[in-house]
Image (tube, rainbow, N blue to C red):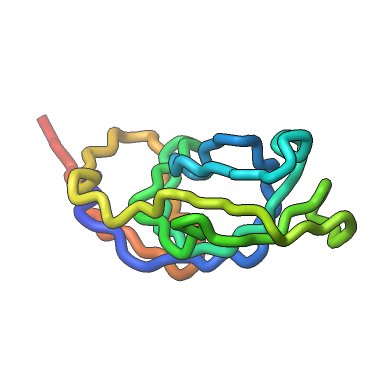
Length: 132
């Protein structure tokens, strides 16, 4: 197959992730600026975002990620995203990712498993049958 384009995005609401002082989320760098250093590790944040993702042989390939808090957004964090022990006065930022123009076209060999990140994302594929 030759995957020629990917279109659409999935919305994820309140995704609970463990947030250290610096961490990657779907390949995006994020930073926490906690006023109390003892809260830097072992706390969680709830993030909502849009992502255009394809999964090739179980490997998640992110084409676009938007809606992540940026420029020192003030967010809620807690010990376990359960709603207990919430704090809202912490600065948090991530680098959103625009569309990657170098992702496509992608040649995909026979036997490879390909799927999208959800029902609102579509991949355009051309199948080649080479007969010797």
